[in-house]
Amino acid sequence: MSNVSWRPLVLGGLLAGLLDLTFAFCFAGAYGKSPVFVMQTIASGWLGNAAYDGGTATAALGFVSHFALALLWAVLFLLAARRMPALVAHPVVAGIAFGVVVFLVMRLAVLPLSAYPRPVVFKPLSTVLDLASHTLLFGVPIAIGARHALRGGRMVGATATA
Image 1 (cartoon, rainbow, N blue to C red):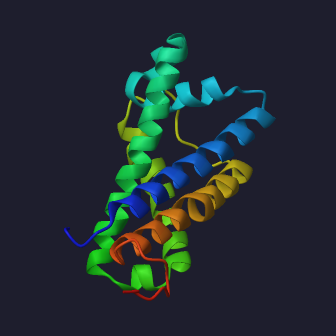
Image 2 (image 1 turned 60 degrees about the vertical axis):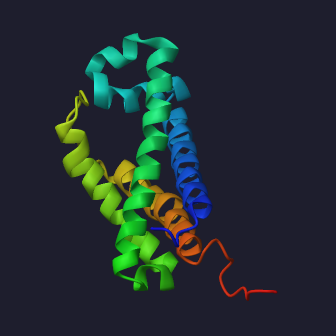
Image 3 (image 1 turned 90 degrees about the horizontal axis):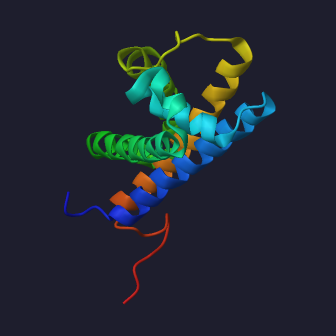
């Protein structure tokens, strides 16, 4: 992947992680839960219920895990886009579709196979909002970052100058 500019992909993945996490903080906050609780919930994928007893250490594990997953998803999108250029030709549509895939894989495979201590449920309001977050706040920034990465970091429509 020598012709890939990694900076836009990393920025897209980090932005996706930040936007998704901000949504999670706001949604959880509406129910009286703290950002530390959100981070510990992410860490519970590794540690189960013990994540909630670990204080800021398990919150930090959740934070690092969240952004590592965001970057992994960005790389997976980039690999798919190298084989299917239409994904970066239409990054908003592709990002929305990718967000649906990420949402479903996380809910139906990653969480059930991890140590996550609760059953995965699809409550209507939280499902709709989480799906919106994964599509618009997560998938789209990754797709746009991948588009720039595959174009050598150049802005869309930009021309080379001598």
